[in-house]
Image (cartoon, rainbow, N blue to C red; front, top):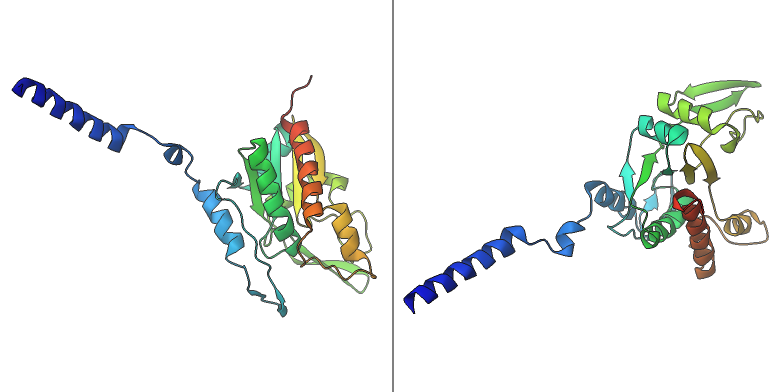
Amino acid sequence: MKKQSILMAIGMSALVLFGLSGCQTDDDVNEPTADALAFVAEHEDLNGLPHPDNPDLIFKDMYVSEDNPFRYVEFDEIIELLENGTGIVYFGFPNCPWCRNLVPVLTDAAIDFGVEDILYRNVWEDRNILELEDDEIVEVRAGHSGYYQVLEILGDLAPAYRGLEDESIRRIFVPAVVFVRDGEIISYFQNLPSFQQRVEDENDDTTAWDPMTEADIEELTQIFIAYFEQVFGNDE
């Protein structure tokens, strides 16, 4: 009996130790990455705050899943993907109202589809700033060297720089989601066209600061799913 009690005690101790160190739960395996948590904070920290340049504009509340696939990267990784890889790049920044509408939809669609990695670059300070002065285009702020390289790769896919009266000069306006397969850019996607049309319609009170409707969200979700299938789907 004493021997049996000793064996039981040893067995219980082993189970406890295994439970503490050797047994991983789903929560352990699927813990959010540091980049995912930083992405959440970067966007949600602005909820309800006034825009620094216009206090009358209030950032709408938006929420991003901690399981989001966004990863902060340098330009060299973006360039490698655009030229040779397969995947998705998201250019944006959290104080962009268009981005705040798009990001939760892109996030949820990616999670549902199983997209595990989206390269993210906050281009707020990466872009150069150009101005038209006396019919001459002047660069008042230089951009990141990698930004110029990306613009060269994107070519005419990137929209023209507004206000310069020169369609040959391009700029990354955000949000911009670039879908790539085998070094071929499938799409340079910016906004849901129907929502953008309502914002630009002088007879419609909709602004970029307004949340999209449920119908908008569903339409945008299906667009992203279709692009995910093109990027990651089979050739069959």
